Length: 164
Image 1 (spheres, one colour):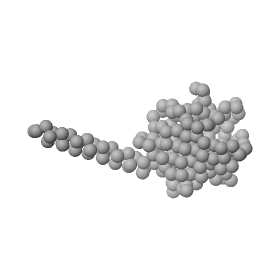
Image 2 (cartoon, one colour; image 1 turned 30 degrees about the vertical axis):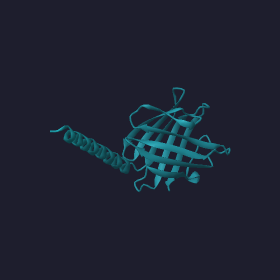
Image 3 (tube, helix red, strand yellow; image 1 turned 90 degrees about the vertical axis):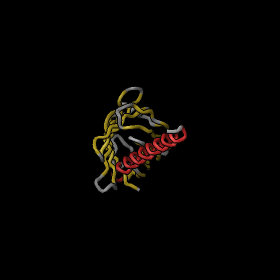
Image 4 (cartoon, helix red, strand yellow; image 1 turned 120 degrees about the vertical axis):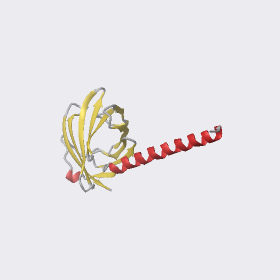
């Protein structure tokens, strides 16, 4: 086989592998029911301790074998909420971006197709653990969180989000 023919074969093989990888990633993304834009329904949510935020929008994007999560909103006192992360469901700590008073890293674990767990830590100590579950119809996401916040207060929150 000549060198130009061998090069064409290798380029074709590389392109085929790339296409397969993209297709597998797209299939994984389509399988994650949490992907989308979610708005907090404050009236259906409970916060202990309160007060509840005025508004929160969570955007979840598929990212390979994981997720990219962006949180934007307004806290009860009117201050902006803006933080996020990009990570895989591999149990490894992922650094948060932005400002989250209760965490600087998160660890993700997928429990099943519609349920995952996010374990947040601040300065190496576990703070809040969130169970994230998407309803069978894909229209509601419930985040049940418990633990101890950075102020040392016990936390037990149930946040109800509606898909936009």
